[in-house]
Amino acid sequence: MPALRFDSETKKALLFLLFLTFFYLSFFFNLELKPFSDDYTFLSAATSGATQLDYLTKRYYTWTGRIAIEGIMFTTIGLPTFWKLAIPTFVLLSAYSTWKAFFSNTFHYAYGIILCTFLTLLISHSILDTTVYYVTGFYNYLLPITSAVFVCTTFIRPSAFSTPEKILALPLAFIASQSEQAGVSMLSVLVVSLIWDKKNALLYRCLILAIAVAGFSFLLSAPGNYLRMTSELRYMPEFTDYSFFKKITTGLDVFNHHFIDSKNLYPKLIALLLLLLSLNNNFHLKKLAFLLAICGIFQGGVFGYIFNSGGNEYFSIRYLSMGLGLSYYVSYTLTLLSLVSIIYIVRNVITSDSKFYFATFLLLLHVAVTALVGLSPTAYESGYRVLFAGDIISLMFICLLFKEEIERRRSLPTELSRMQVN
Image 1 (cartoon, rainbow, N blue to C red):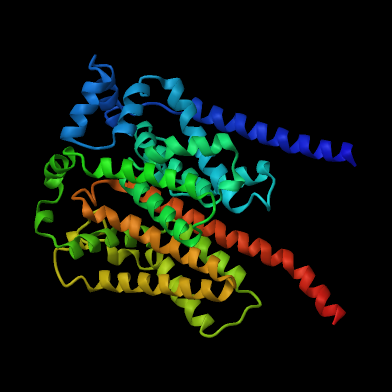
Image 2 (cartoon, rainbow, N blue to C red; image 1 turned 90 degrees about the horizontal axis):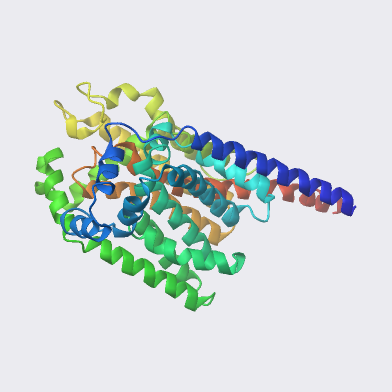
């Protein structure tokens, strides 16, 4: 038996090593700085001869409070070997964190990390191309968002992580707090987790929370934020006249377009998992709930033509040139009904109250984090990269459902045995 076990463990380790080799080589030989992009803008700044302190001070007072991220980028963007290794490493760190949070008791690490990496790479390539396969996108999105994922999983289950991992979470908490979307997501999870469980490793968790709050406060208080927003008003001159509600609805417009996007596989995967979980589980209004959920998810592919007005590529009501835009509001209504139906189905297929509350929290956090882009005049100019944070949260939701389905299937033989005994 020990020999067989050793042989099995060796095969899994070799499989994982082969995967790592292929994964790192594919990134190392394919990643390059993109010409005529922000890559070369930041590379020029890093090689201009200015000191790091002078550069960061200028950026802080004229553009952004992302000092930690900007400092890392200024120091390393001129070192191709660094970011060619760092980008796949942070993709794997995100996958490792996801496996640790959901599947560490279900799958061997060799299988679990590969699975979570695959699920991560199911994100639309339009998003990955601007966050994972884009060097500047790595610094501004993949780096802080992955840091936030690792910090959150460490914060929720400190006992599942080693001492070096807990120490690593401390600087990563500050890095994550230096991005608006990553910071909001992380702080939301940390606060909810601390309220839910106040006794587990309280001192360590309070330290992480303090670091995150300090970093996020530093980000928001930067004088350059106002100057940057003033500069970016050229993208949306009417932004200064928007009420807070109008800004949020602009962000929800961005979320709606992504949710119904036929290239977005995550909502389809959520629908599939909910369908599997509901097999042999009849509940009130089940058919209606699934009908509304599916109509909302697939409306982009079926009725996509109604979201394009005047040939614009932004699919936004902002560009509507005639009429009342009723087709847009029909879309918003379908999306809202779909989200409510998803929550209703989750309530009926997940028996644990804590899991249901956490699943609902993740779904609502995805909507909120994406809607935050409406607070910037670049809501429509930022492109697909601002959708990455929401999709990572959606991935957590998917993993929770997937784990629930695995546990359900594993419990079936036990339930059948009990029925036979009775």
